[in-house]
Image (cartoon, rainbow, N blue to C red; front, side):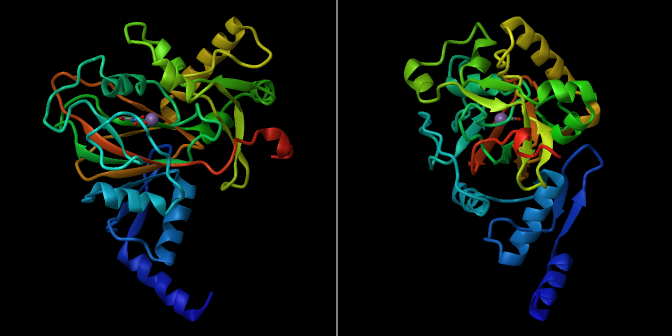
Amino acid sequence: MSPADIVRREEFELSFMVKALRTALGAEVIGLDVSQPFDAGTLEVIQQAFFDHHLLVFRDQNLSDEEQVAFSRQFGALEAFPEADKTKSAIEIYNVANVSPEGKHFDINDHRAIYQKVNARFHTDSSYRSIPSLASIMYGIEVLPDGTGGGETEFSNMFKAYDALPTSMKARLKPLYMVHYYEFGRRLYPELPPVPVKERSMVPPVTHPVVRVHPDRDNRRSLFITANAGNEIGGMTLEEGQALHRELVEHVAKVEFCHRHRWRVGDLVMWDNRCLLHRAMAYDMEKHRRVLRRTTVAGTGPIVGPFSHPTK
Ligand code: OGA
Ligand code: MN
Protein backbone atom coordinates (compact mmCIF):
# COMPACT_ATOMS: atom_id res chain seq x y z
CA MET A 1 0.00 0.00 0.00
CA SER A 2 1.43 3.39 -0.96
CA PRO A 3 1.46 6.35 1.48
CA ALA A 4 -1.16 8.01 -0.71
CA ASP A 5 -3.45 5.00 -0.19
CA ILE A 6 -2.97 5.19 3.55
CA VAL A 7 -3.93 8.88 3.62
CA ARG A 8 -7.01 8.09 1.52
CA ARG A 9 -7.97 5.27 3.89
CA GLU A 10 -7.80 7.61 6.88
CA GLU A 11 -10.04 10.04 5.06
CA PHE A 12 -12.62 7.27 4.50
CA GLU A 13 -12.59 6.37 8.14
CA LEU A 14 -13.41 9.98 8.97
CA SER A 15 -16.08 10.36 6.31
CA PHE A 16 -18.32 7.38 7.18
CA MET A 17 -18.71 4.66 9.79
CA VAL A 18 -19.67 1.01 9.70
CA LYS A 19 -21.50 0.07 12.89
CA ALA A 20 -22.38 -3.58 13.52
CA LEU A 21 -25.95 -4.27 14.59
CA ARG A 22 -26.43 -6.06 17.90
CA THR A 23 -28.47 -8.83 16.32
CA ALA A 24 -27.32 -11.96 14.48
CA LEU A 25 -26.16 -10.13 11.36
CA GLY A 26 -25.85 -6.79 9.63
CA ALA A 27 -24.27 -3.36 9.99
CA GLU A 28 -25.37 0.20 9.45
CA VAL A 29 -23.24 2.40 7.23
CA ILE A 30 -23.49 5.91 8.62
CA GLY A 31 -22.72 9.09 6.72
CA LEU A 32 -22.32 7.80 3.18
CA ASP A 33 -24.30 9.12 0.20
CA VAL A 34 -24.60 6.17 -2.19
CA SER A 35 -26.10 8.11 -5.10
CA GLN A 36 -22.58 8.84 -6.39
CA PRO A 37 -20.22 6.13 -7.67
CA PHE A 38 -17.73 4.98 -5.03
CA ASP A 39 -14.03 5.51 -5.52
CA ALA A 40 -11.94 2.35 -5.37
CA GLY A 41 -11.05 2.73 -1.69
CA THR A 42 -14.65 3.26 -0.56
CA LEU A 43 -15.83 0.31 -2.63
CA GLU A 44 -13.21 -1.89 -1.02
CA VAL A 45 -14.31 -0.89 2.49
CA ILE A 46 -17.98 -1.45 1.62
CA GLN A 47 -17.24 -4.83 0.02
CA GLN A 48 -15.35 -5.92 3.11
CA ALA A 49 -18.15 -4.73 5.41
CA PHE A 50 -20.62 -6.64 3.23
CA PHE A 51 -18.58 -9.84 3.51
CA ASP A 52 -18.14 -9.38 7.27
CA HIS A 53 -21.73 -8.48 8.19
CA HIS A 54 -23.77 -10.00 5.28
CA LEU A 55 -26.23 -7.10 5.32
CA LEU A 56 -25.65 -3.34 5.10
CA VAL A 57 -28.20 -0.62 5.85
CA PHE A 58 -27.63 2.83 4.33
CA ARG A 59 -30.15 5.25 5.87
CA ASP A 60 -31.53 8.53 4.53
CA GLN A 61 -30.71 7.98 0.87
CA ASN A 62 -32.44 9.67 -2.04
CA LEU A 63 -32.12 7.45 -5.09
CA SER A 64 -33.63 7.49 -8.56
CA ASP A 65 -34.06 4.16 -10.41
CA GLU A 66 -30.96 4.93 -12.45
CA GLU A 67 -28.89 5.71 -9.36
CA GLN A 68 -29.96 2.47 -7.69
CA VAL A 69 -29.04 0.49 -10.81
CA ALA A 70 -25.65 2.27 -10.98
CA PHE A 71 -25.02 1.64 -7.26
CA SER A 72 -25.88 -2.04 -7.69
CA ARG A 73 -23.67 -2.56 -10.76
CA GLN A 74 -20.63 -1.76 -8.66
CA PHE A 75 -21.05 -5.21 -7.10
CA GLY A 76 -21.51 -7.21 -10.29
CA ALA A 77 -23.80 -7.88 -13.24
CA LEU A 78 -27.50 -7.46 -12.47
CA GLU A 79 -30.32 -9.93 -12.95
CA ALA A 80 -33.10 -8.97 -15.33
CA PHE A 81 -36.79 -9.27 -14.46
CA PRO A 82 -38.78 -9.65 -17.68
CA GLU A 83 -42.19 -9.53 -15.96
CA ALA A 84 -44.90 -7.35 -17.47
CA ASP A 85 -44.63 -4.33 -15.19
CA LYS A 86 -45.12 -1.19 -17.22
CA THR A 87 -44.40 1.09 -14.28
CA LYS A 88 -40.69 0.35 -14.11
CA SER A 89 -38.00 2.18 -15.97
CA ALA A 90 -35.45 -0.60 -16.45
CA ILE A 91 -35.41 -4.38 -16.78
CA GLU A 92 -33.06 -4.62 -13.77
CA ILE A 93 -35.71 -3.13 -11.44
CA TYR A 94 -38.28 -5.17 -9.57
CA ASN A 95 -41.05 -3.22 -7.88
CA VAL A 96 -42.00 -4.75 -4.55
CA ALA A 97 -45.28 -2.94 -4.03
CA ASN A 98 -48.87 -3.52 -3.04
CA VAL A 99 -50.10 -0.42 -4.87
CA SER A 100 -49.78 1.03 -8.36
CA PRO A 101 -48.04 4.41 -8.85
CA GLU A 102 -51.52 5.98 -8.95
CA GLY A 103 -52.09 4.63 -5.45
CA LYS A 104 -54.52 1.84 -6.29
CA HIS A 105 -54.20 -1.34 -4.24
CA PHE A 106 -53.48 -4.35 -6.44
CA ASP A 107 -56.07 -7.02 -6.89
CA ILE A 108 -55.09 -10.30 -5.21
CA ASN A 109 -54.74 -11.95 -8.64
CA ASP A 110 -52.27 -9.35 -9.82
CA HIS A 111 -48.82 -10.93 -10.05
CA ARG A 112 -47.38 -8.11 -7.94
CA ALA A 113 -49.72 -8.89 -5.05
CA ILE A 114 -48.98 -12.61 -5.43
CA TYR A 115 -45.28 -11.93 -5.29
CA GLN A 116 -45.71 -10.14 -1.96
CA LYS A 117 -47.53 -13.12 -0.51
CA VAL A 118 -45.00 -15.71 -1.64
CA ASN A 119 -42.24 -13.60 -0.04
CA ALA A 120 -43.73 -14.23 3.40
CA ARG A 121 -41.79 -17.50 3.78
CA PHE A 122 -38.05 -17.63 4.39
CA HIS A 123 -36.27 -17.79 1.04
CA THR A 124 -33.22 -16.59 -0.83
CA ASP A 125 -33.69 -14.69 -4.06
CA SER A 126 -33.42 -16.57 -7.34
CA SER A 127 -32.66 -19.95 -5.77
CA TYR A 128 -34.82 -21.36 -8.57
CA ARG A 129 -32.11 -20.36 -11.08
CA SER A 130 -29.17 -22.63 -11.87
CA ILE A 131 -26.98 -19.73 -10.72
CA PRO A 132 -28.80 -18.09 -7.80
CA SER A 133 -28.21 -14.44 -7.04
CA LEU A 134 -25.32 -13.00 -5.08
CA ALA A 135 -27.00 -10.02 -3.43
CA SER A 136 -30.30 -8.19 -3.32
CA ILE A 137 -30.60 -4.45 -2.85
CA MET A 138 -33.88 -2.92 -1.73
CA TYR A 139 -34.80 0.72 -1.39
CA GLY A 140 -37.64 2.06 0.77
CA ILE A 141 -39.96 4.45 -1.10
CA GLU A 142 -43.19 4.12 0.90
CA VAL A 143 -43.27 2.22 4.17
CA LEU A 144 -45.71 1.51 6.97
CA PRO A 145 -46.34 4.35 9.44
CA ASP A 146 -44.42 4.23 12.72
CA GLY A 147 -46.06 2.07 15.31
CA THR A 148 -47.90 -0.08 12.75
CA GLY A 149 -47.29 -3.81 13.10
CA GLY A 150 -45.71 -5.84 10.30
CA GLY A 151 -44.10 -4.90 7.00
CA GLU A 152 -40.55 -5.53 8.23
CA THR A 153 -38.12 -7.72 6.33
CA GLU A 154 -36.65 -10.45 8.51
CA PHE A 155 -33.25 -12.02 7.80
CA SER A 156 -31.75 -15.25 9.11
CA ASN A 157 -28.02 -15.99 9.21
CA MET A 158 -27.32 -19.38 7.58
CA PHE A 159 -23.73 -19.57 8.90
CA LYS A 160 -25.07 -19.42 12.45
CA ALA A 161 -27.97 -21.75 11.68
CA TYR A 162 -25.56 -24.30 10.17
CA ASP A 163 -23.00 -24.01 12.99
CA ALA A 164 -25.73 -24.62 15.58
CA LEU A 165 -26.82 -27.93 14.04
CA PRO A 166 -25.84 -31.13 15.83
CA THR A 167 -22.89 -32.97 14.25
CA SER A 168 -25.18 -35.83 13.27
CA MET A 169 -27.45 -33.45 11.32
CA LYS A 170 -24.45 -31.84 9.59
CA ALA A 171 -23.32 -35.31 8.48
CA ARG A 172 -26.82 -36.14 7.30
CA LEU A 173 -27.13 -32.95 5.25
CA LYS A 174 -23.66 -33.03 3.72
CA PRO A 175 -24.45 -35.22 0.68
CA LEU A 176 -27.95 -33.87 0.02
CA TYR A 177 -29.27 -31.92 -2.94
CA MET A 178 -32.63 -30.16 -2.95
CA VAL A 179 -34.89 -29.33 -5.86
CA HIS A 180 -35.67 -25.61 -6.18
CA TYR A 181 -38.60 -24.74 -8.33
CA TYR A 182 -40.05 -21.34 -9.21
CA GLU A 183 -43.57 -22.65 -8.95
CA PHE A 184 -43.19 -24.37 -5.61
CA GLY A 185 -43.83 -21.29 -3.48
CA ARG A 186 -46.95 -20.52 -5.44
CA ARG A 187 -48.31 -24.03 -4.94
CA LEU A 188 -48.32 -23.44 -1.20
CA TYR A 189 -51.19 -20.98 -1.76
CA PRO A 190 -53.98 -22.95 -3.45
CA GLU A 191 -56.13 -19.82 -3.68
CA LEU A 192 -53.65 -18.22 -6.10
CA PRO A 193 -53.76 -18.80 -9.86
CA PRO A 194 -51.07 -21.15 -11.27
CA VAL A 195 -47.90 -19.75 -12.82
CA PRO A 196 -48.54 -19.35 -16.58
CA VAL A 197 -46.86 -22.11 -18.62
CA LYS A 198 -44.77 -19.61 -20.58
CA GLU A 199 -43.35 -18.08 -17.40
CA ARG A 200 -42.83 -21.49 -15.80
CA SER A 201 -40.98 -22.93 -18.78
CA MET A 202 -38.35 -20.18 -18.55
CA VAL A 203 -37.28 -21.47 -15.15
CA PRO A 204 -37.31 -25.28 -15.04
CA PRO A 205 -36.52 -27.02 -11.71
CA VAL A 206 -32.88 -26.98 -10.58
CA THR A 207 -31.01 -28.75 -7.79
CA HIS A 208 -28.57 -27.20 -5.32
CA PRO A 209 -26.55 -28.63 -2.45
CA VAL A 210 -28.22 -28.25 0.97
CA VAL A 211 -24.89 -27.25 2.49
CA ARG A 212 -22.88 -24.71 0.53
CA VAL A 213 -19.51 -23.08 0.90
CA HIS A 214 -19.05 -19.33 0.59
CA PRO A 215 -16.36 -18.29 -1.90
CA ASP A 216 -15.77 -14.88 -0.28
CA ARG A 217 -15.77 -16.20 3.28
CA ASP A 218 -12.95 -18.71 3.15
CA ASN A 219 -15.34 -21.46 2.01
CA ARG A 220 -17.22 -21.31 5.27
CA ARG A 221 -20.20 -23.65 5.28
CA SER A 222 -23.80 -22.56 5.52
CA LEU A 223 -27.26 -23.98 4.98
CA PHE A 224 -28.83 -23.41 1.59
CA ILE A 225 -32.51 -24.12 1.94
CA THR A 226 -35.64 -22.14 1.36
CA ALA A 227 -39.18 -22.50 2.63
CA ASN A 228 -40.33 -22.07 -0.97
CA ALA A 229 -38.67 -25.32 -2.08
CA GLY A 230 -37.31 -28.47 -0.66
CA ASN A 231 -39.72 -31.36 -0.30
CA GLU A 232 -37.86 -33.08 -3.10
CA ILE A 233 -34.49 -34.02 -1.70
CA GLY A 234 -32.25 -36.40 -3.62
CA GLY A 235 -32.26 -39.94 -2.21
CA MET A 236 -35.31 -39.42 0.01
CA THR A 237 -38.98 -40.17 -0.33
CA LEU A 238 -41.22 -37.14 -0.61
CA GLU A 239 -42.43 -37.73 2.96
CA GLU A 240 -38.89 -37.93 4.34
CA GLY A 241 -37.94 -34.82 2.37
CA GLN A 242 -40.98 -32.98 3.65
CA ALA A 243 -40.21 -33.88 7.29
CA LEU A 244 -36.56 -32.82 7.00
CA HIS A 245 -37.51 -29.62 5.19
CA ARG A 246 -40.02 -28.71 7.89
CA GLU A 247 -37.43 -29.32 10.60
CA LEU A 248 -34.87 -27.09 8.87
CA VAL A 249 -37.37 -24.29 8.20
CA GLU A 250 -38.28 -24.29 11.91
CA HIS A 251 -34.59 -24.25 12.82
CA VAL A 252 -33.67 -21.21 10.69
CA ALA A 253 -36.55 -19.17 12.14
CA LYS A 254 -35.03 -19.23 15.65
CA VAL A 255 -34.67 -15.74 17.00
CA GLU A 256 -30.95 -16.07 17.77
CA PHE A 257 -30.15 -16.30 14.04
CA CYS A 258 -32.44 -13.46 12.97
CA HIS A 259 -32.61 -9.73 12.46
CA ARG A 260 -35.75 -7.79 11.56
CA HIS A 261 -35.37 -4.65 9.50
CA ARG A 262 -38.02 -2.03 10.21
CA TRP A 263 -38.21 0.10 7.06
CA ARG A 264 -37.85 3.87 6.96
CA VAL A 265 -38.25 5.94 3.81
CA GLY A 266 -34.81 6.33 2.20
CA ASP A 267 -33.35 3.06 3.52
CA LEU A 268 -31.16 1.14 1.12
CA VAL A 269 -30.58 -2.39 2.36
CA MET A 270 -28.16 -4.72 0.65
CA TRP A 271 -27.83 -8.36 1.69
CA ASP A 272 -25.85 -11.45 0.79
CA ASN A 273 -28.18 -14.09 -0.64
CA ARG A 274 -25.39 -16.66 -0.36
CA CYS A 275 -25.63 -16.83 3.43
CA LEU A 276 -28.91 -15.17 4.50
CA LEU A 277 -32.55 -16.07 4.13
CA HIS A 278 -35.22 -13.39 4.29
CA ARG A 279 -38.98 -13.00 4.44
CA ALA A 280 -41.55 -10.21 4.39
CA MET A 281 -43.49 -9.91 7.63
CA ALA A 282 -47.25 -9.78 7.13
CA TYR A 283 -49.07 -6.46 7.26
CA ASP A 284 -52.53 -5.19 6.41
CA MET A 285 -52.08 -5.00 2.63
CA GLU A 286 -55.51 -3.56 2.02
CA LYS A 287 -55.05 -0.71 4.45
CA HIS A 288 -51.41 0.33 4.04
CA ARG A 289 -49.13 1.25 1.16
CA ARG A 290 -45.71 -0.35 0.93
CA VAL A 291 -43.42 0.39 -2.01
CA LEU A 292 -39.87 -0.89 -2.22
CA ARG A 293 -37.62 -1.14 -5.25
CA ARG A 294 -35.31 -4.08 -5.72
CA THR A 295 -32.23 -4.68 -7.82
CA THR A 296 -30.40 -8.00 -7.73
CA VAL A 297 -26.74 -8.79 -8.29
CA ALA A 298 -26.36 -12.03 -10.24
CA GLY A 299 -24.34 -14.92 -8.86
CA THR A 300 -20.99 -15.69 -10.41
CA GLY A 301 -21.29 -19.48 -10.65
CA PRO A 302 -23.16 -22.56 -9.53
CA ILE A 303 -23.38 -23.30 -5.82
CA VAL A 304 -20.49 -25.33 -4.53
CA GLY A 305 -21.20 -28.04 -1.96
CA PRO A 306 -18.96 -29.22 0.88
CA PHE A 307 -17.27 -32.10 -0.95
CA SER A 308 -14.92 -29.76 -2.80
CA HIS A 309 -13.69 -28.50 0.58
CA PRO A 310 -13.63 -31.59 2.77
CA THR A 311 -11.54 -30.15 5.57
CA LYS A 312 -13.74 -27.13 6.34
C1 OGA B 1 -38.18 -9.76 -2.31
C2 OGA B 1 -38.54 -9.93 -0.89
C3 OGA B 1 -39.20 -8.90 1.14
C4 OGA B 1 -40.04 -7.77 1.60
O1 OGA B 1 -38.59 -8.78 -2.92
O2 OGA B 1 -37.47 -10.63 -2.82
O3 OGA B 1 -38.34 -10.99 -0.38
O4 OGA B 1 -39.97 -7.46 2.80
N1 OGA B 1 -39.04 -8.89 -0.26
O5 OGA B 1 -40.79 -7.23 0.80
MN1 MN C 1 -36.92 -12.13 -1.66
